[in-house]
Image 1 (tube, rainbow, N blue to C red):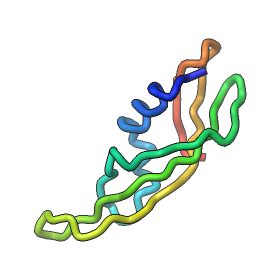
Image 2: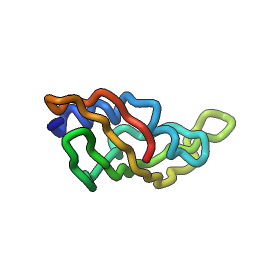
Image 3: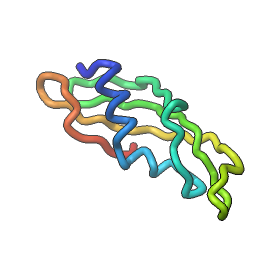
Image 4: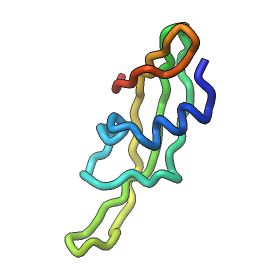
Length: 87
């Protein structure tokens, strides 16, 4: 199955994570955390949390908002991640 590094790399680069942003802000990469909820041979269901940086019109950060959601990571026969979608 996919190791922690592969999941972390995916979360740092996938567009699907931005689905959970509520204020159209930016994801703070250092705040991303996940927990594996369910393991199957063909998928992993993970719960993801992160902070969203909320910006003012001037470009300054004015707030951070906690965001969360579930992602389904699709795996191939050797356990590599081949797809991701909100769950």
